[in-house]
Image (cartoon, rainbow, N blue to C red; front, side, top):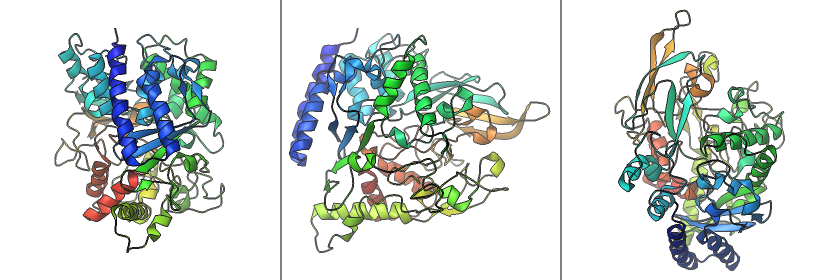
Length: 532
């Protein structure tokens, strides 16, 4: 039985602390009122109980960098009336279990740890099916549960088990999984729950794109079929999530419930609204916050960096309108005005704003020698850009994060930049030097086309990515880049939670692509990313 009293008490304590924080942070009265109203709902158990309380039209939440806001364009939503908040399966989970409004529509380790302690690991979030590092883990005692759910508690990771496609052109020859899930036919991978907000900007559903793929009976999202394809893919995903994560029997969500879930989540827009050092992010000509984000124009392939280089790809491309042939590497223009702040103003407030503006400029203009990235540098037959591949491509952050003021790729383009690949010099860290020792080591070898036997062409990784969807060896490790808005509210980062902070994420890129960033450059990039 869930200890709801303990859970509510924990929420109320958090609320008391947070209200003190926002007072000190100097939020505007309207924002304070929105925070107070929304957090009162949270303290009452709103985000788990589905008891008829209301998700408001505008809400602000604290995060380590300041606060973020979510706009609900559908207007105030009654929880008990929306299946996003209802128990549709058999194990007590709901969509909201892993997509909390107070966690930027995802979940984070601090939240998970508080929930574990408040309920002694008995909240519906803690279910062996995928909350445990392996579903066979012993969860009979508190300490056993703490061990079983260790990856969820420390990294916010959910286990995703996917069968190797029957017609895969590779063979999984070995799996070393310290948690016991060593099967080679159904592969266990560990991924962060993607946020269910800002969804109209998606070009693929799920990290590996499996909910936008014929392999699951869904549709690749293209300019010609958007937004119908996106809405249908999200509806399909709501069914798969219920039958999988919530262990449903397939009867729910019904077609009408799927529509209600998708209607709700596609009306949510989340972005940072206040920085602890720089203050409100929509002051003095800045355009931070979810309001301007919700109004951001978008179409599939907008500002495609690939289409601009190779017009046959990612059609129609274009910046202002489809097919206009334009591209800009200036992906973000939120803080241009802050770059003009008078240098004579040396207080912490203005210094923070200048740092954010410098970070935005770095994001837009920093030259990056892109090498060894599957999906860019490999042969066109493997998903790369040109026949024979390209050893190095001079790009910017916008090469992969090209959607204006959003930061994902505007066309479905899975890439492998090495976040899940062990370094050849030290397999306990990734290609960018971040710890991946807690993840499985999966070795796959390409099959001989004639004999069907594994060849010596092998790769070791911690996540097979797109290759578990389409069965292609060339696609091992490829995943999509997520939307970059609302980052500060949902650490850790990368699909596997390997970057505990945004500073770690910047460190990854600095090492992986030999950027030689100065300490100032790194600090400025982090300051900027925190404001998204």
